[in-house]
Length: 368
Image 1 (cartoon, rainbow, N blue to C red):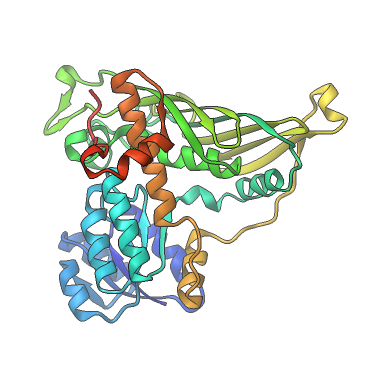
Image 2 (image 1 turned 30 degrees about the vertical axis):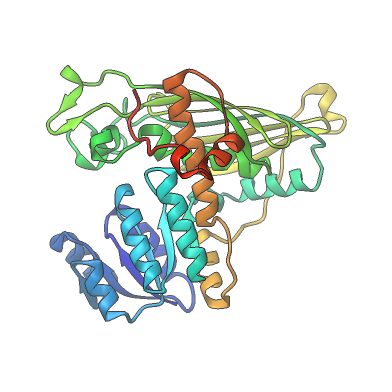
């Protein structure tokens, strides 16, 4: 696979390190509007071809795949350009800023027949994959209740840097700079973590979003700090289970922790993932009476990067696809509507509404 890297920031470095560890993958070019950043990145990874614009890279054309690691609001136009050029695309999450764009990108990729995947990185968590297998095998029986949380503390800790002075964090707090807040940034991860692990989809949502005052006048320099910092969400799943999902950047003591609990009639599972590792615990059989939880051994799994490379090699589409990410974006968009209108929303009804052009849910990026 001959790979082009579009965007050369921090996440691109992580991605390229993973891609270069895969046999048969060659990173042949890099693109960035920031010349200094592009040069440092390309020198570090010994990438010969360097481009200031995607148009230049496409005109060159000596690549079959691209990883799109641009800021969220850039994903739409750049991915469409790559698809139009017949290139396979691995896109960072979220796929787009709203569902309409995500759906357009999905339909374009499917029509072009190119491999399309979104880097929902927590699919790489082996305990999550094992939990899903156990649910699908019926080991938990009928699923009744699901809890999921994504906890970060970077608004109360400087462990990752100082958000008050660093643009790489400040933009995530400002809708005017393309952020949908914690809902758009990590919400897509925990929604996927919950639905994928419990092997079901979300069909109803009722959400509350909260933006806390973080600076005098709610602004630092050019950044109006109006994006949501926390959300809570009650959901119904298509398998009949009830769920509670929440995320925040104010979780003092939690650098970056995802947790999923799945409760079934025959047993329960708990997946925990932190920067220092992940684990899977279960409560089954006789242990149910004493509420005893035991660790479950989990084999390693292929990463998103490995599966994308294999999909390109074989021509066989793998998950998570653009369409899956678009469906998650619909949940996020409707969560914003739910907060604004203080009511529960049915995703199926919204999907039917989408079929009428004059009744489509409008692009929503600002919480009122």
